[in-house]
Image 1 (tube, rainbow, N blue to C red):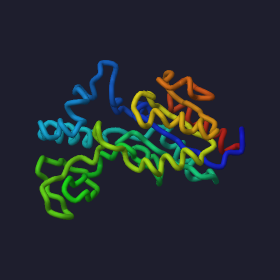
Image 2 (image 1 turned 45 degrees about the vertical axis):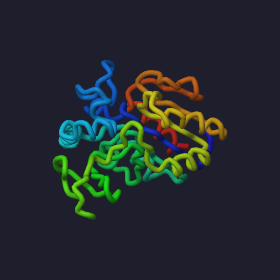
Image 3 (image 1 turned 30 degrees about the vertical axis):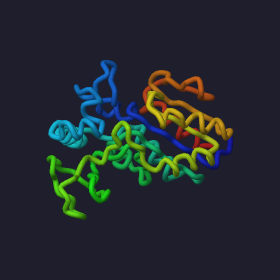
Length: 233
């Protein structure tokens, strides 16, 4: 294995699905029985705040019923033991990476256990139900919403992600469909700067042809093997 100095890892819904969380867009086009357009757009929040808030309340409550799997724990081990630069970016809004032991996770699509104030842009941890009109503890405006990046909104920390991709020599995509941008374009950025690219996925993604190597199988099996290879080098 080459002597890598900087690795960027992107994880998607597939890694959380092995813990029992539904993937963002299932084969029927629905997420937990709802059309994504009905629960994950600014227009949906304005049109039916009761539905949107209830939907994320239910997703938040479900987190307590699932546990991190072997893939989450293996990435935490990599974070602890690897000596190079590592950036773990996730499209997932759950906290399974953190509960699996990862201390530094960039949630580009937001977090279920966080509330965002639409008035002052303040954020705070939020684990309970969040009825429409919940008051912001910072500015007291009744404008709290789930801290989720809706379709049509800019993902978080894109400048930091882009800089890391342009500086990495290995990009690894785990459990992603390769269909949702801008994350789907990360592999192309990494290849443009000459980085090696590896896909670990249950099935080939929409962007499989951009990867130098693709390994197919459950993340809970593939990720620990790959981490062992990196740390043994």
